[in-house]
Structures are given as C-alpha cells and as structure tokens.
Length: 435
Image (cartoon, rainbow, N blue to C red; front, side):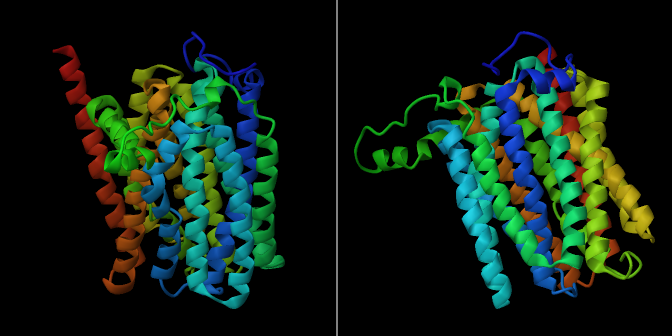
C-alpha cells in the first residue's frame, strides 16, 4: 500500500522515485491529467463561441472567465466541509460523471447561439469542480510519502502546465481545422475516463472523513450543523488563529489580482500584429501555449534550487511574487508576437513557482482534520480575487477608455502590493518568533 507519512526530509528523492513509489497517488495524478487535457479544448471552444471569431468586447469574455472561478468562491466553504466529512474518492468520481453530462449540453447551447446558456453551463461545470479540487488536495498528502510531497506537487503543476500547453495548441488547431464540436465531445469523454481511473483507488482510513458530522441538537443549531456552517466556522477559526497558515493562504489571493491574465492574453492574441497566419484562434492559442510552458518549467527550477528546505522555499516564493508582475509589464509593452510569447513564458516561470510552493508549505503545515476546509478557503479566496480582476479590468477596457497596454500595466503594478505585504509579514513573523 502506497502513501502515508514518511520520516524523510521532503524534496531529497528524485521525481522518478516519487512517481514510482506512490502507486495510489499515480491514479489520482493520471485521472486529473486526462481531465485537464479536455478542459483546455473546452475553454478555447467557449471563447470561440462567444466571439464567433471576433473579439470586439472584453466584457463577455471576462464574464465567462469569471464564471469559471466565482462558483469556487461561493461553494468553496461547503466543498471543504464535504471533503472533510465524506469519502474523498467517491466525491471525485461523482464530480467527474456529473461534469461529463454538463459538458455535453454545450453542444446544444453552441448550436442555439445562446451566450446566456454558455454562461449557465460554465457556472455549473465549475461548481462541480469546486467540490472536486479540495477533495483532491486533501487526499494528496494521505497518498504520498511526506518526503515526496514537494515532488508530487511539482509533477502535478508541471502536468497542469503540460496539459494547458498541449490542450491550447491542439485545441486551436482543432478549432481551425475541424470545429468547436469536436473539442466539446473530447472534454466530455475525458471526464468519463478520469472517473474510470479513480475507481481503482483504494478506500481506506485515509480517504474517510476525519470525523462524522454532528447532527445532534434542535432548531437553528442543528440546522447549522447539518449544513456544515459550524464546520466552516471551525475551519476559519483555525486559519485566522495560525499566522503562518493565514499568510500562506493570502499568497494566491494576492496573485489572483492578476487573474485577468487569461483575458489579456486572449485579447492580445486576437489583436493585429499578434495573430498567427491571420488567425485570432492561432494567436490566442500561441500565447496560451507559452503560458503553459512557463508554468510547467517553473516548479522544476524552484525544486532544483530549494529542494525541501522551507527557508529556500520561502525565498523562491518571494522572488517569484515580485518577478512575475514585473515581467508582465514587459508583455504589455511588447510589440511583436514572438517577444510577447517569450515574456509570457518567463512570467509564468514565476507564477507557477509561487503557486506550487505555497501549496506545498500548506500541505506540510495543516493537520488532516481541517485540510479540506483550509484548501477550500484558499481556493475560494484566489477565485474571488481573480473574478474581481476579470470584471474590473474588462470594464476599464470597454467603458473606462483604457487601452489594453495601459490596463495590463495597471494590473501588474497593483500585483506588486501583495508581494510587498508578503515580504513585510514574513519579516514580522520571523521577528515575533525570535522574541
């Protein structure tokens, strides 16, 4: 039986050893990999359907990108309770099967030409994902040896990026050559394959809820416990009471202020001078692909430098927090597709490093009984930040008179504020520990 907690120092074993020696985690990894590949086909298809090949307005795109994130914030606390109460394997399989059905309805919405239904279905698909991700994050440390935790998260992040890269590149080609229907069908199939892979995951104590739901009592108190509100409060009290955990959770929230990156790259790839072969779909796919490559390599570089040393991990995170928005200023000022692509690649070396390291440090810090709620809170906050970013910057583009370059410069500058707060809070925390 693989998984469980080891005693070695994290990060000292090779990636191959971590992959080889954690059989159960490999199933979790494989299922997510298959599903991710189809998701990027789906994302490009939706963008294509909204623009119908034209991208004259930022707000419709921003709305659909926001709907890919807002449900995670709205349902995140409840999803965390579910992840801590119920069998995490069953949660993941149920989410995959429900998502496959939802995705098929995009075919009807696309042929009907209804943007409203595209919005509704996008929200439904991501609501399901909101329940899956905390369960997956909470299950990971139970399936992976402690000394392999950084390696497992590095591989997961790299695979997310690889699937983003392959999905963006292949998806843009499919859209140009075959049509959006093929992309939707492929996404639905990948969910089914993911569920099938997860059926081989064992059910044991580490998959089970840490404790049964409390359902005793009467009246409002009993209803509150039944709905999981008491569990949500307990999780939030834990997060607020641990300054190290609270600080780590706010890392992704701060990076979420650059959440409109997807919108920016979509509009940039569709603009004159950035289209490939005159095709907006290929221009968008190219910039998304450069993002995916950078996101894939970043965690490997951070792992090679920091290993499992918590101090080096924090230093790497700090460098990434400042570096990514600074490089995006260069993206905003670039005038050619190849320079923009190269700078996007560099920026996401930092963005992915920030994401993976904060996840690893949280997984090493948070106890199992509140892990689901902690990761749900973290994910919910970053999605709230990213949603606001999309809507605010799209409004500035459409109604505020700002051009794309000025808006991207504004977003990059504002993202430096949480980076400064991260650095300041770290020094303050270190000083309090010494005293």
